[in-house]
Length: 157
Image (cartoon, rainbow, N blue to C red; front, side):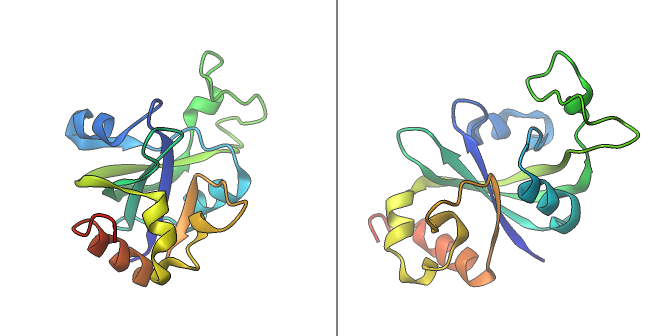
């Protein structure tokens, strides 16, 4: 089992939106970065754990957990000319972009803010905390996953 951080702007798709989705499940579409795409296509597997991370909002941070319920498959929004994720280079025969499906496990009692993540020495190597890392999908080490889960009950830790 691997662990991941999936980042979404809260105003675009939030943990609350996932909680209201049918079956609390959604596809993670619209990734348009090759490295993040490669993670979705090649490395993210059914059963993997996901931190749902809110960005570009008042409280940036980890808002919940999810599980991957469907491994990488072509992002069909890339073929839809009316979609904001349309990419003429991608076709059903030669897909460029991929997505996975995730299901909500838990909405955290509080968002664990980015500032708290930065203060935790156990997270010093975490990808999302590295300068210049703007990927929407990043791997999370098991030790980082466990450290973050412990932080939920320790406000200001």
